[in-house]
Image (cartoon, rainbow, N blue to C red; front, side, top):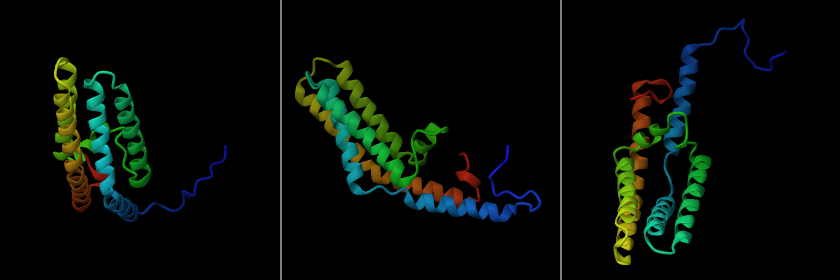
Length: 166
């Protein structure tokens, strides 16, 4: 079978040039890890809707709205930024935004656990848990983006190809 690649075995690959191309690509990717403000607001609202939907009676529509919103935002981010949370190194994206993305995840999971475990709480407590989870997600989203840009840039400055594993 004939190959359509542009590789010519008679010409060796220049490793320095290949490394520079990889560094340039990573620098462009690091610069793109910046979500618009409205993405963080929508993500916070979707997290709040999911938490509220888990705890409030007859509120499955809120949970469905939150889950569908989170899916749509994730797909939009991958299309715009090119950095996905669902890749072979699933937790690498989360740790790139550390500690801010981890704190936001822990607060959201704690809010969900609270409304599921304490099932007899008044509706205002469900609303407070949902509001706190959403507000923390909104507030820490830009900080997580900045941390991810910094870590990608630090990997680039350290000369680690492909982002380097930490």
